Length: 374
Image 1: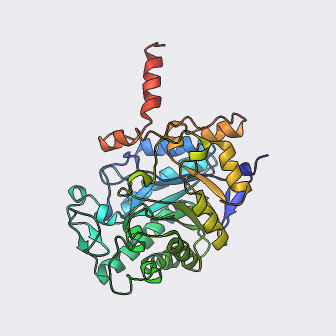
Image 2: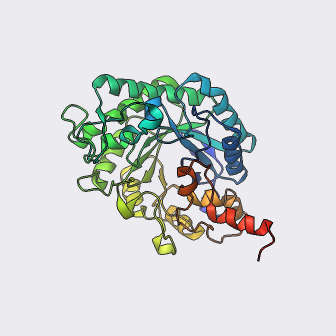
Image 3: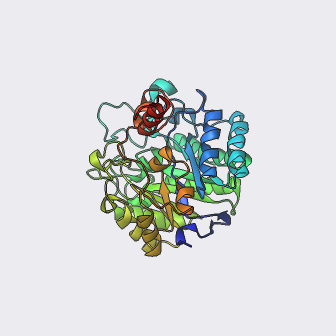
């Protein structure tokens, strides 16, 4: 049996294999961020497809932190019943699910939120974007919101939470010197810039206890001039490990990172896969907690090699599972062909146009088949 199909665990959360579905924005939630039948079906399909750990859509913890339309929310107790339905659908098919807690910060959509986006500092590094620099009270309220989001996730039956501190969202902005120009205890050296994330973890721990798994997704680098470096990112992860963090998912870049955005195109060979593998190796050498690696993984052999060589503990994917939610089951049953995903990012188009997330290529193929075309 491949090492990828070994049973594993993260802080007592037993997983059937080493595959993780990385969070994304599906644009399938209600206008208020509530769970819909479409979201439940998607999570159920992933569980049926044998994904070891499913990480949900990025769920905004406060209304002003919403990034896009029809984004999942976790900002009020009224959303718990729908979240519970989502978690139960995954559990009925033997899966595990974590809720990703997020706040978009300066990338929040003011047309949706009705207010100016919050940012670590007025000098945000982003041109033509008006922001409100966060006060200490704003910071305290956001920290509490992450804690309350975790409480709701646990009450809804989720198996874990993941803190979104990657891709230029609010906590990522605090970690990055590109976005964070503060001169108080939350700015300057990395030990200060990581402070808000430390306090988020402490707040979450105070409401969910010590045994509930708390994960994080963070950038290895921002790929921006004067942005977060790999050395700083590893140092931040070491600090967070001491706060009781259970696992770290390694990604990188943001919407401003040019060709180094998190979801890169043209993954046409094994050599182009796993574009954060060097960072994964650095994190593995520095940390005692499990490392989850995302970024252009398409081949079973590449994934297996990363874990076998000790460059990662878990393999995380998103785009391949949009086209093939049962990819992991296919691999487990012996069909080890690479994922069918073309890495063309066409799947971004529908959500930006107000439609639900789907693989454009796969849908066209099905429509052709339905019409009897060859």
